[in-house]
Length: 131
Image 1 (tube, rainbow, N blue to C red):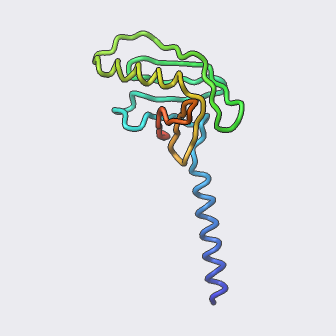
Image 2: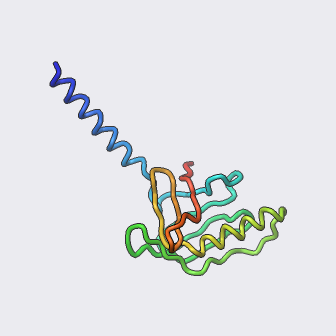
Image 3: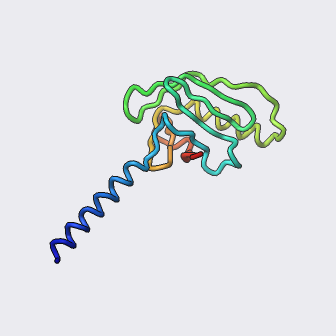
């Protein structure tokens, strides 16, 4: 009886660890949203060698490469030039785009993406967005 219980417990724990591993989002296959942002205004997606998203009022884009695990190299960030209806949102967008321009690495923990600068500091934290 004890042995059967131990086997069931071990199988249950193994199943939980496998479930946790499969719940981790992928940098390339996920639409990310800025944590704490209002609604869906600040988003990020990586597809192949391109990064793109919505920066509040404007769409932005950059070349992206991932030469090794955890390393993210971005080219110059460009964007459309639409007028923001709110000055505060325009300022937030500029800060977001400036932070993107400083990204050199990333870390994914479950459904959270952290983008880091060259000194290892967290520049942006985004969460996976599911349809």
